Length: 353
Image 1 (cartoon, helix red, strand yellow):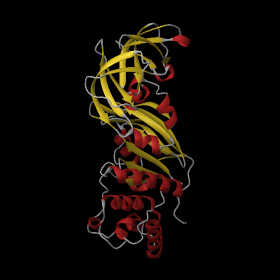
Image 2 (spheres, rainbow, N blue to C red):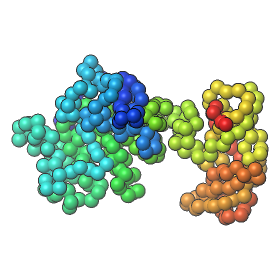
Image 3 (cartoon, rainbow, N blue to C red):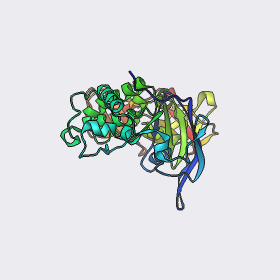
């Protein structure tokens, strides 16, 4: 295979800032990305992840800080001089050009020889499994096929870095799953680094080598999917990583034997941040709060949704605390459920009021 990422060792974001008037959209974002890494920028709308990507691409200028590719500072270069591949949410294909011409557009802008363009376009079509679609117009393709064309156009220029801005959000659930696997396969095949923006924690967990969780223009935590899933560093990160139960509570005891009050019941728990006795936030995933015969917390079920092998439920304890939990048994509104959670799955963070 001749298509391969241009060689480099490391991309460095050094205290990257971007202001829009008085709004600080990026506040000192610092990150090192190694060649071959797949990085997901994860966070809610407005957290700064797309702004960061656009600054990397050169579509936005930095207000402060710098971007380096090995020993070359690139934030002062024009977008085309950076040589990065970009995949947009809406595909951004030229509707009047064939698939082949769309894919070869970047190479043509670089004045590459016609024979080289044809060869590389053929190879890119093969990589994205669209060999028989080259002479069609984008409007004749499905959404998933159009996204493959956009990916082929991004990789055919052999970029050191591929930037993807929520590329699967316009696809249906089945296509999203298929394209996730394709994006990871292509990433590994060409050996580039990929920076992938998403608000979908499941997407980030399944694709990334490391996840960067952002909030209000700042990096809140960087870690592997396993680290982010099992031990979020802060309560806001935990909330975004699926710890839907966030209960303001009182804590007591030493670090080795901490207890928290949930639904009027004292439960053993695991502190994540340093804290003293007093108020805190207990975070529990619904999947870790299970209905069981010997559960200590009693709740009255408000709603129950069937998800195949289990019911995803919400209920209220006697003190009014709302809790989300999983039940293997059928639940309906008004039922009583007894809930329990393992101490290592009840994570406690400082900052309760």
